[in-house]
Image (cartoon, rainbow, N blue to C red; front, side, top):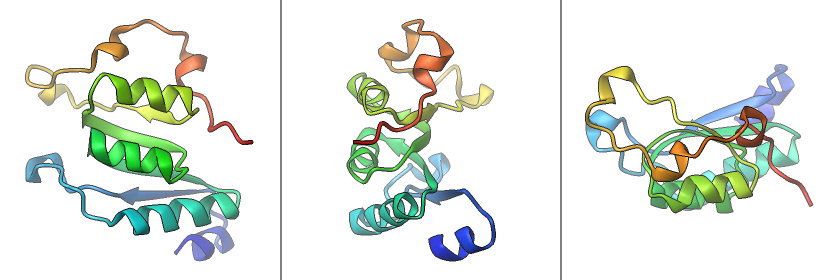
Amino acid sequence: MVRQTKAEGGDVIKIFATASIRDGGKQTMTDEQIAAVCGEAKAQGMRAVVHLYPADTARKVILAVCTGVEHGTFLDDATPQLMHDCGIVFDPNYPVSDCPTVEIPACLSIRRPKTEILTTRKTP
């Protein structure tokens, strides 16, 4: 999938590592599948963005060298900071309909310049 997307001119892969929030947001891909897709995307010079909700899946994505996280509704306070420190783009993308019920992690309430939050992954 990654190589085919690259061959067709794509520069980003988006994977859905968890189910919909309506279905509880449980992890739907194995850790190995996440690592394989993100690792191959990196090897091909592509970005890998992951749709997820819980903090435990987000930490697995960080270890798998993925470059972006979308949603993250159930993140704890430490995980967005870890994503920031690792240079992973975090797009919380909280739907307006969820605002009254979603508790936004405290570290997101810290005002940072947009360029500091939206950075690309640091490479060694």
